[in-house]
Length: 311
Image 1: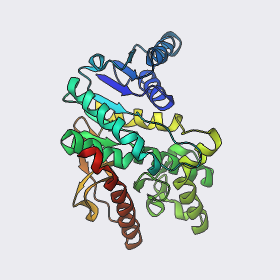
Image 2 (image 1 turned 90 degrees about the vertical axis):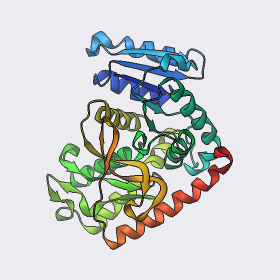
Image 3 (image 1 turned 180 degrees about the vertical axis):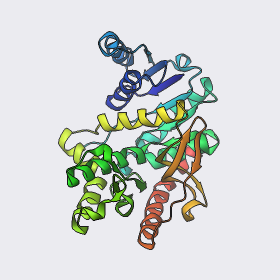
């Protein structure tokens, strides 16, 4: 199985490292526009093979898409990262043109690939990729919900003072500081609702911390995070390549589900060898439905800025 990752920066390289170390794919190609950068990152990862015990082939390419040919999954991390004080939405004008060109170039050499979009603003870039390529909706997946949900479970585990791997929870809605919806009502610790252990105020704080999880790291680091995003991409790619049928919140194209159409936004999906194999229709309460509708309105407003790119 072959995976191409476009963008050899922090997120792309961390994703490649995680996929290689976990033996998810047999071959990984890192591609970047900076001369020698992807090649250097790939060589660095390859030099950990004997110490970490994996045999995945990792190679780099400077803007030569022919080396990506035959990829089963392509991951797009291209674009500039967020700077302190910058919202994901402000990135749209810069990153839309980049993502469109990258997606079209990748599919020239890997026409059957499943596309995973990481570039921000992620929901809008996922929608752009779908519209620009004309691919079936099951083959275009935005990664954001997987990352937001991992952050949600991290904050829940800290509030509970219990292991994160014993906590379940998901985040739906737009992948933005004001649009994501941590589903505290459905979160559980070993099958027991977390509301049995945490007060309403504590759950409200967990949800608030989750929603600004990316911005918090950007303020601390001076740039976007990369360990959790890279690992979240690897987790998603693993479910695709190994047909694991995991239920993962992802940004996907809706056609009436959750009361929304003509939009890519985060909802729980079954992810397998065909990409999005099913959108899971969980029963939201009235408050959650209202929040989801508001989130969709915000995402749709950003999509309106794509007219010039898609023209």
